[in-house]
Length: 113
Image 1 (cartoon, rainbow, N blue to C red):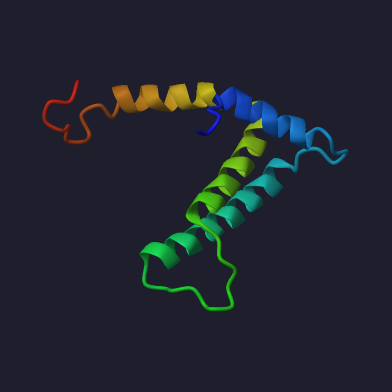
Image 2: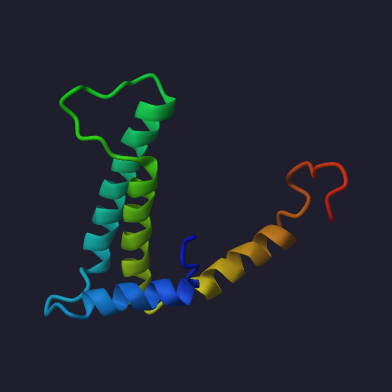
């Protein structure tokens, strides 16, 4: 069974890792470039598994899970470098979805409204 971690624990774990290095976090611009790069790698994997473009035999085997992990790591780095609490960011976006967008999608039968 996996050890369940809170968002705060994930942010602290990444911060503890990055804090060991003199260079620290990359700039927001560099992190945006890294995030874009990792998102591109995720898109390649999605395309290989679910799309019409099979992998070349010479390409390294990676997984969607691994690429999502890379995206999450860079996203946490960006949040930490900008001193953004991802739990607060998440709560704000969920509040937006549950208020402004509450009637945007068709609810399943029997679902709590």
